[in-house]
Length: 70
Image (cartoon, rainbow, N blue to C red; front, top):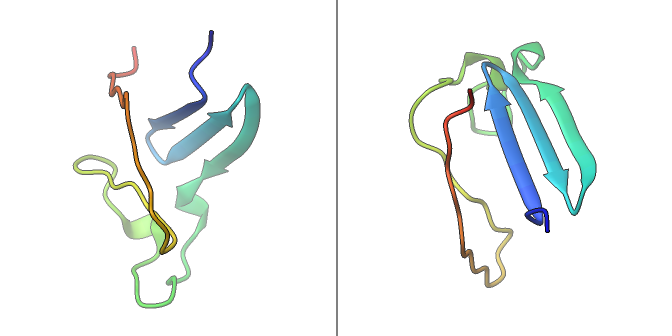
């Protein structure tokens, strides 16, 4: 059984697959406009920490695995 969600990042390219369906395929280097009070996606780091976002309701995470891409 495939994991319910896969997030893959390579350089500035981000791919997200949920329940076997591609839902995001984007190059963050193409986004040079600021987002509200945040810096443009184009200028953000490609290495370091990552965060999991919620939209104000209760959220739980389990079985999170992080692997380096080969």
